[in-house]
Length: 156
Length: 146
Image (tube, rainbow over all chains, first blue to last red; front, top):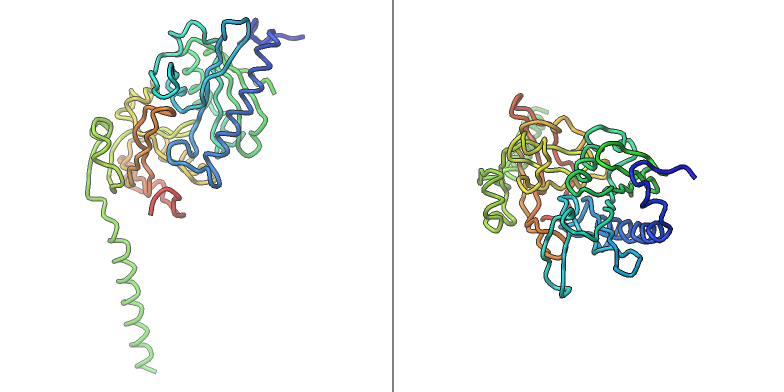
C-alpha cells in the first residue's frame, strides 16, 4: 500500500484509522447540526471545528471534545468534565493528530486555494502534529486532506 | 390627470422617506476597534458597532487587528466574523485581504467548553478603506439577531 507522506507511520496504524473514521463522523455531525435546523447556534454556526486524537494509554487512541479552539492549536484539557483548561496541542505528549472540519458553506473549490490550505498548514506547524481536514459543504463532503505543515495531500 | 400625477409624486416621496426612516432605525453609533472588543467584549454584546481591521476570509472569517496578525493567523488578535450566507459570499468578496470597516452587531458566543472566544460579529455591511466603497452587504436577515 502506498504510504501518505504527511502521516507515514500513523496512517499505517489500523487502530488510529478506526478512531479517525469514528471522529470524522462526530465532527461532521456536529458541524452540520450547528449550522442548520434546530441545532443552529451562535458559537459554532458556519465555523471550522475540530478535535484532537491522542493515545489513550492502553495502546489505542481516543478523541477529544469537538470545539472551535482547535483552530487556534489549543485543546480543552478538562479533568472534571466541567471546566476547560486550554493547553497548546504541541504541549500534550499524548496528542498524535488534529482533525478539522471545514464549515458547510466552504465548497470544494475553496480547498484548492492557497490561503485556505495555508490555514491548515499553519495549524499543523503550530500544533506540531499532522492535520486532517474534512469537507462538509457542497461537493466537499466526503473529501479528506492531510497536511504536515509542508505539503498537503488529498487522501480521498 | 394632473391631480393623479401630484398624488403619485407625493406617494413616492412618502414611501421613500419611510424607507429612509426604517434604515435609520439601526444606528451603528459605537465606533470601536478590535482591541477594545477583545478586551471588553461584554460591553459590546448585542450592540450595533462600526469596527476597523484587516479582514481575512476563506477557511475562517476573522477581522484582525493588523495585517501582520492576519499574516500569522493570530486569531487571539482577531474578531470572528459570521458569514452565514449559503454561498460563503463574504469570504469570496473583494473585502478579503483588505483593510475594512465593518458595520454589524456583536453577539455573545460564550461557552467555555467549546471555545475561549467571547463573541462574533454578525456583519451587515463592509466598506474597503482604500476605496471607500461597499464590498459586501447583507441581503438576507441573519438568524442570529433581530
